[in-house]
Length: 161
Image 1 (cartoon, rainbow, N blue to C red):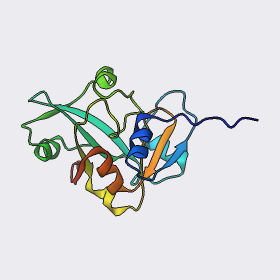
Image 2: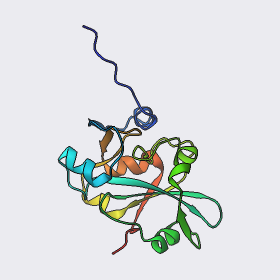
Image 3: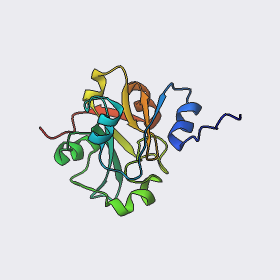
Image 4: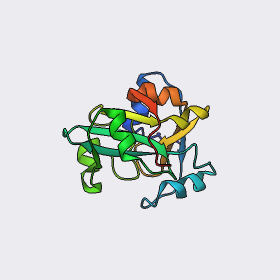
């Protein structure tokens, strides 16, 4: 019997190209619910599972933020982190056009363009973290430093207290 070929996402291809190690976690998912539900499905802590949010600044530039799935962005901290006066969330209907990914499958790695990316500094508390793998039903586990390397990201405090 032929082995089923693993379908690679842009994020996986990018990590392979950079020779950065990662582990794939697959789960059943017909439609996106939320990151907390996915963390529970995988039996992982919400603290080590990160969601990816995309914003647009007053300048018209896009910015990507990765933060624990059960936390919210502090838009003032985020704006300061990227040198903007203010930011607003990109509308869900525009996510695919901006990133090449769909809601629930958006990851900072391998977007259509490389946007300035900020990862919440709590990622540094973990040896491995989990982020979306680039499509529904796929999560990637990797070292925070490898995520930063793959998306040219920095670590800052960006969540609301």
